[in-house]
Image (tube, rainbow, N blue to C red; front, side, top):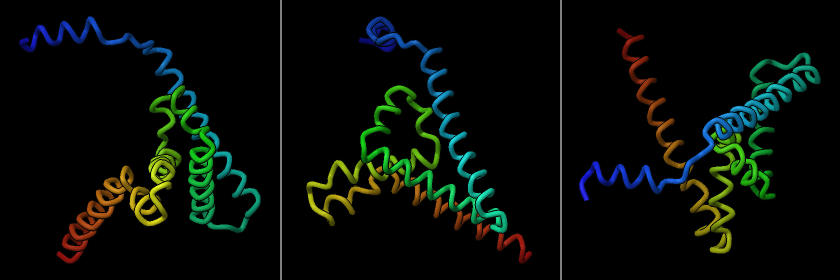
Length: 147
């Protein structure tokens, strides 16, 4: 089967998706998650009027990570993801989900070899890429600042 025949076969057999419905669900659910995060930011700023902006942001991040991990543990995040698709992968809650899901899946293998070893299977490469990129940018900035 050549490339053209394969493309025709795939286009005939691939299931059709309701793209507009999927995009709308992703947009709405992602928007609700972001609105929830903004709500926590506003709440913490109201409850802690003397707090610095970085503290309010840190509290909001911790709350969203906690909720992402909690909803993953309760099986709610999977249901949200099945409806919203990529809209549920809003950076902070999606990151919590990507750490909690493999940890839950492999917990029966024990604390060290299951839970701790598998926790960063998905998120690990993202963390490594972020750390390496920040070191490279820091070195470049330092070289430019010294010059």
